[in-house]
Image 1 (cartoon, one colour):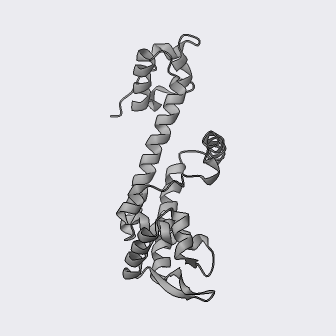
Image 2 (cartoon, one colour):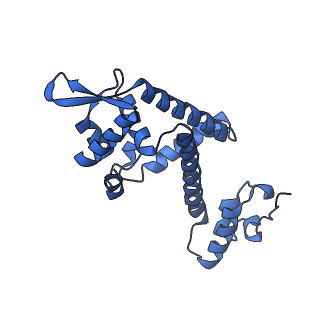
Image 3 (spheres, one colour):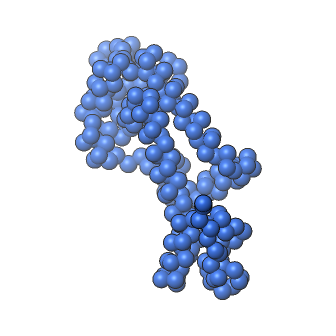
Length: 208
């Protein structure tokens, strides 16, 4: 039987506590572990904004859950994240889905050596192939093989269906509104226009 939580007394009467906003319009059976923690932190840290804290915790929790879902999808598609990211960059280029190794390294924020190692592994796996660059006699272009296209299509299709299933707990209007609000929240961060951090990490280069 699902655990039923009582709405904290502080959240019942408007004006008694800043935590009331965190429980506004929430039914007792909708409360969860994050709500339990908010009650504790509101008690222990009076200046804490429980609504903001709850928002951050829920975004972090959802990011983790979506990340785990993607990991399962990639495992089923016989891809790892590095291969998926590189194939995605090639697909973003549009037909004929070719980019130079230098452009790929720049977009993925990898060193030249790390990019070469990644390309070697994907080529050995039959996911990409190197072609002569007609505009640079010493250069090469990278493009997905048929197997690379198929693996990427399978992963993206599977994950899209999973994410659509998760999001069905919201109505279409709620999804649109949440999308709009999250877009606005992202503007609080300096790199918001890119949708993700482009900073090169030592982990990326070391692992390749």
